[in-house]
Length: 621
Image 1: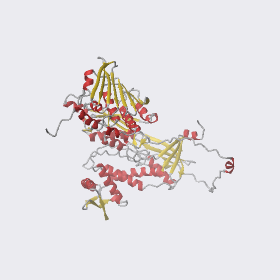
Image 2: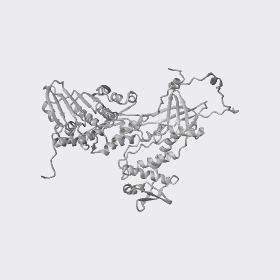
Image 3: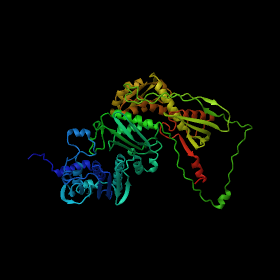
Image 4: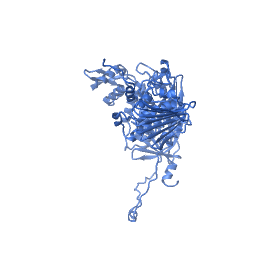
């Protein structure tokens, strides 16, 4: 007898379950996908002990006949794919016919189902064996009950995490499936306690409120766009609203919540310089496209997909989200609670006194000259992603904005009136401010009829310097200057292979870099514009960007260098500047293309409304 033998059906299903069913959340996912494919409009999920003891999914979908119910638990039996050509046009969430037999092989499953035509069926399968099958009364739809998951695989059961961890995985998936299908009403219970529900009214913003809360939902920004190939819609968060995890970014493809690094990356690139480091936006992006252009059959759990025109899709998503963000004002308003003043004893109260500091009064008060920006902006729109060379393939150029700035002295006033103009693509957003003073050598204070505005002088100068340097780097030639002492850098073998391919392109940017034996590179020349800067830091930053992107993107290289130059060349905290420098800084900030955040994504301006200030002093309740 040969060594190789055919496995039994039950053993094969148990092995397949190891791929498909990892934890209780995997069971919930598979059962929900079946319910959605059955055209359900109401789905309830009932858990006992976070799904470890029991998972029950009740839907009002099409239901199954007795024949289909039995066949559904046989391996590779499905109603969703009939020929090999159907694989390339999959529009259902499930299609392999592996989930139900895998679940039944490692649990005790009870099924109640009816197609509304025939009498209902009650079916019990445990460990892959059919224990009972009998007619029963059941409304149209299906009730799937999974008990004692992994009862016959103790090693898998042992590795189930805490109940809270398992419940977290389940709620995370239900959040995403609810965002994917706002037309379906979902309810989630754990130990008879309602945890989550949606109304099924096909209102995505309402579902976002159920998932993330009303305060977040009302601040989300809607968007939609389409071309001949793709249609995208959904909501994105204001950059002020961000989180520490990518998990708040939900990507939906033809109704399926998926993971795709490159799509997420295109979204994050649109938010570039608007978010602080290691912060991510809240996004619900719904993508519709021809099923022929996406392959969902590349992952056991169907969470990852492959696109046939991924680069075009990335550019489309980046461009459209960037357009939306360009029209948003990012001035955060802090939520301030009135301080509770401690009660002081009489003895302490009697010793308190307020003494005004002695100020030498000058013989003549010199009032500052008011400064008003009058020159209109001259905005020249340059079509995005036009210039494409061998080193700039698929790079979307930033729009070129030419600015004419002129300061005109007018009549004197007791306070300096500063008209801040922040240009946008649609219109000029004007903000009139009265400059007040400087706080702690770090913040500039200004006011208008709306309230108080606090400007971070370091962040403001970073933004001004960044846009100036970025424009400078776009216009410079590839002229270089030789280093007196060449810079030697060492890299891992895999990194060196990537960098060697990039050396000719970097030469066009003004960096003469050669191999230096072993795993080293030597930098012999740098661009003329970089000769007064820290050459080693600039080269290391650029080469790190090449390794990270696996290609040379001249636009990103310019951006990285511009950010480094702006950070090093800006005034620091606790550094006092005179009124003339403040005028110049605020005026330059007014004409920045993006005056609300520094290149690292930190806010530049914070606003406290008059109402918030009055509330602190109990003038309003």
